[in-house]
Amino acid sequence: MNRWLLAALCALATACATHEPGNEQPADARLPQSDADPDCVASPTLEIGTCQVAGTGEPCAGITGEVGEFVPVAAGDDIPMVVGPQGATMFILAIRTSGIDPGDPNNVTSSDNPSITITLIHEQGSEMALYRGRLGFAQADTAPMLEVNGLFVVVDGRIADLVGAHVTAYANVVDKNGVGRCGALEFVASQ
Image (cartoon, rainbow, N blue to C red; front, side, top):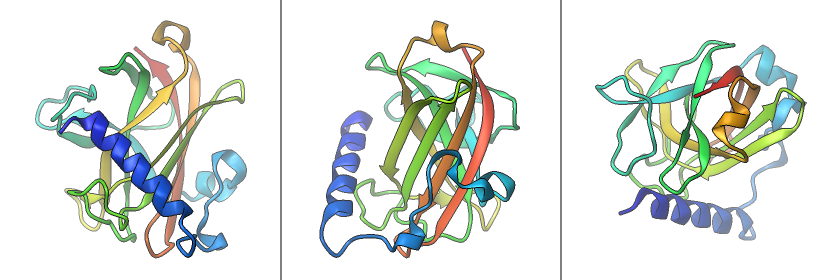
């Protein structure tokens, strides 16, 4: 099945699941977005990285059937932008954490999957992208870490206009039990 169709179904399932009466998260489980939570910057509980095609070392490109793996990114490193199959400029990010219920990484429509929010803030202080999804985390190579790859964060604009921009990503994950993790990463947009 087409990856974009699966992503759309996942987004629809997430929207329906989060707006049904009785399915609200407790207020203390909702983690703030962007830089409103200094603890996410000072003491992160998740790591934001990028995605590479398993076994090749090539950056993920959002192609159907692509199997990605987590790649650590240090603060200030470059993260390349790609143009997806439908012409959208995006960063393909990944998250690694522990201590959450992973959900079902083989079922993108599972309501047990953690809720993921990623906000990208441009160096000028404006929000340049918002990703929301509900995906299952897989066991990472290093236990007890869990990871999710291939998070397509679509940005407004052309690659040529964004190259060299300093971007800060803020990520929040909340599992089905209300356990939250958050973190931040400053990086440079590259081609």
